[in-house]
Length: 455
Ligand code: EPZ
Image 1 (cartoon, helix red, strand yellow):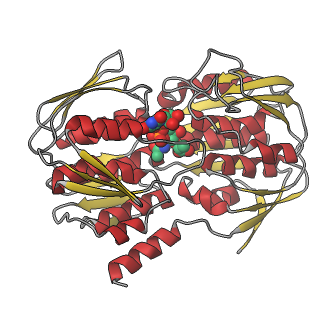
Image 2 (cartoon, helix red, strand yellow; image 1 turned 45 degrees about the vertical axis):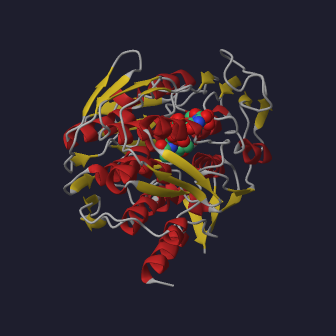
Image 3 (cartoon, helix red, strand yellow; image 1 turned 90 degrees about the horizontal axis):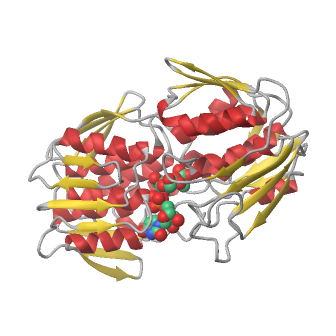
């Protein structure tokens, strides 16, 4: 096996699920300070964007998480030189980009969704791309039909193969008019990363406008792209002949900030989240306050804490930005089990994102899942067989249990549930959490959590 493949297998294995188990002694509030790095859901895309530059890029505030390692590995198998500088900066030099061998790329299959975003940049650079079948959290079907339809509109030829898809662009890539049936984050990124170097103008209707998307647009503009975002979610991109490398400090991780905020509420603690900013968390802060959480905005971060008293139930409907993010609901559901009354969470972004509640029910939570769209308007999943509304009755005292982490955000929820429960729980499969939360165990330790890792 050649060294590239060995490296790929090693990197791929290192991002796999570890057998690590943790014994958690609950009942102690989390108190202290943690520091955020750049957003998982921006940094990984910014790394892919470096492929489009004719010169090297520098990306700062990069978290040490396995999703970043997967993308680093995929860039390296395509000949990009990726160098770590200090503890959170990457230098990405795409000057020697080359096609990778199928079996080497495949070593990264199944561990992330980011590979699909390599299509446009590789088609521009090499005229071809092979993308392995995608991984990512099991929270729904997670199709890529919007991605492939968009690429075809640019003139790409998509050939589905047993282990993935092969793309070519026999006549190059030309600007297109594209309308997304749903404001998909990934599909919007796909179009952005393809349109910036396509010939002519691209008009994208129904685009996602999450802060991570806007930060990616900032990066592309730094590279030389011409991109406008209209109030009606229409993004227009004028293709240019050449893009340069960028120098950028990534936007902070909103999802991690919201996760620790919910942890402070669920454990009756007090956590200062360094690097968190009010502007991108506004909707979360409103809900947090309505549930009974308190927060103080500082220049260098936000202090989240349980001010005492009873928590109040809430009716929450997840939505695209500027709505309540789907990634914020899992950790907050743990706090809602302690609220005095009936809460409802209507998950409208993913059809199967309540799997994590099984473990909470085992711990004594009163949570019922329903197929109906509860608490808000009818969504895409309303008349189908998906249990995408949760009713949470509180307050309940959670009791210790043995749980297996199902996905990234659900795993974080299991941890804070165990920390807020009386007694000793065991949590298995915690490797998934390392996909998106940098130094997760060290942060828990710094916040005074009482746990023991069993290898
Ligand atoms: C990104 O996923 C994030 N992941 C998710 O975060 C986040 O929850 C999601 O956006 C929504 O904000 C990354 O950025 C790596 P989508 P993505 O395309 O791009 C449907 C986390 O925990 N859809 O906006 O995959 C899809 O089924 C993760 O950090 C299609 O139907 O999300 C879903 O119902 C979880 N066809 C909806 O759109 C497509 O081709 C939203 O998906 C693409 C999407």
